[in-house]
Structure formats: structure tokens, C-alpha cells
Amino acid sequence: MKKDIHPEYHTVKVVMTDGTEFETRSCYEGGELRLDIDPTTHPAWTGGQQHLIDRGGRLSRFKKKYKGFLG
Image 1 (spheres, rainbow, N blue to C red):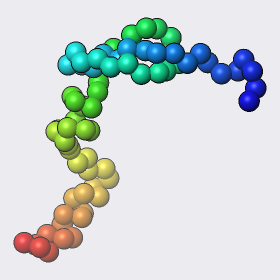
Image 2 (image 1 turned 180 degrees about the horizontal axis):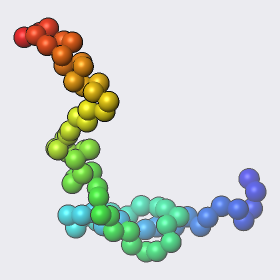
Image 3 (image 1 turned 90 degrees about the vertical axis):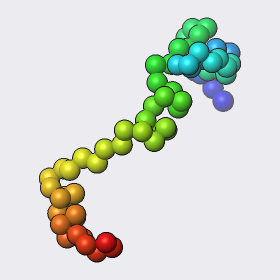
């Protein structure tokens, strides 16, 4: 391994959006990392506010093609 090319790796306190904290090791410059988005609040992890976007009419064509297929 080459010397003096890797960033310094040290302990950092991570503060979640709900105020919970934990310590981890990181090369982040600073003693505390405050998150704006985390797994307890973001819809990608909580399953909320999911939308299908119809780009170029593909979703509309799919729905028209398979209308009544299972129902």
C-alpha cells in the first residue's frame, strides 16, 4: 500500500433527523455529521409517496393493452 495517499480515517458522530445519534468511522472532515434525509424519513425507505411517471405514453399504452387481463 502506498504511504500518504489515503485520507485520514477517524470517528464521527452522526445525528439523524429524529435526533438519534451514533458513532461511526469516516473520512468526513468534522466531528459531527447532521443528516437532512435518512432511512426513517425518506419515502424510498418508508414506502410513502410513490408515483409512476408516464414517460412517452408507455404507461398509458401498457394499461390500454392489458386492460381487463386480470380483472
